[in-house]
Amino acid sequence: MLYKTYLNRLSKAALTVGFSTCSRATNEAFLCEMLHVHAQSHKTMAKTKFEYVRQFEADDTCLQNCWVVVRLDGRNFHKFANLHDFRKPNDERALRLMTRSALTVMEELNDIVIAYGQSDEYSFVFKKKSNWFKRRASKFMSHVVSQFSSSFVFYWKDYFKDQALLFPPGFDGRVILYPSNQNLRDYLSWRQADCHINNLYNTTFWALVQQGGLTNSEAEEKLKVDESVDKKVITPDAPEGKNVVVKRIRKKVLPFHVDIIGDKFWEEHSEILADDS
Ligand code: GTP
Ligand code: MG
Image (cartoon, rainbow, N blue to C red; front, side):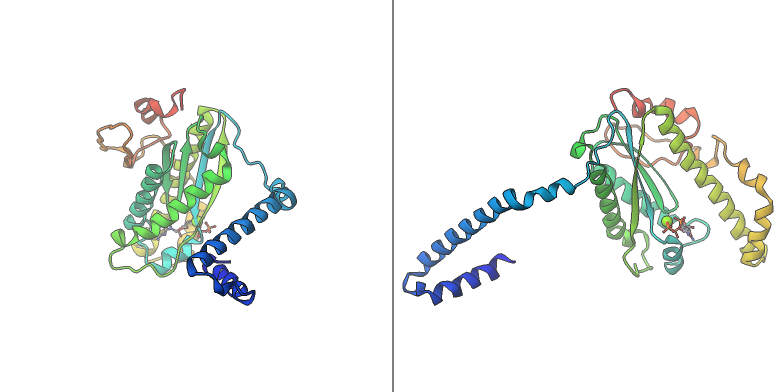
């Protein structure tokens, strides 16, 4: 119950028992005292009778000495992309907005050492020794997802100038623990390989439709038999990685569009996997 409503009810009750003879100031002081007593008795009750419900809360502490990865993913973005007229296969505005939202997450939340994103997903890596919110998985996940979602909406107009946001987008989230540096690197490599496979497929698919004049199902059929094409792109020297010159400034979060499967990135940024992470 809201405080004001409660105070009004108490006032009425006080009037019916002849409390009106006192001054207004005395009335208010008395009511505050009543409220205080009432609150105290509720507190006591909460401790004795109701507090056991706390035991129903699951312990979701993340295992010590593991990298904590939170991956979020746009809910039903196939539909969201169509309704907001995303360019095919890649909408630069959407990708930049995703990265802007990820930057906010990295700036606002503690202990994130690297984030990697593609399409409608982003992964955030918390350092091994993070003790943020006592390593509770639900805290890691809910803070990342809510900060990302609100930023996505907040910055929408900066990227989609003529395209109104038609309905509130949603993102799901999950937490994954990786005990070794190699596991973490393999995880990030997996996401990058996924990005290349999907991109190659989508680029080829839309080229067949838009430039080749095939119907959607004809293009899909054609790509189904041509499996070797998918595999060719999973190489460390993917083209986006080149010619990105960024001055390294400690503590500043910067977007890179580089290969993270090969060793080069990890050698140049050895601080990410450093022992004290
Ligand atoms: P759930 O994640 O299961 O809710 O479904 P989803 O529809 O979001 O599918 P998924 O996450 O597997 O894939 C993301 C989808 O978003 C892609 O299949 C595309 O349809 C769409 N998408 C993401 N980025 C772009 C883009 O840059 N351009 C276009 N046209 N579509 C995109
Ligand atoms: Mg999705």
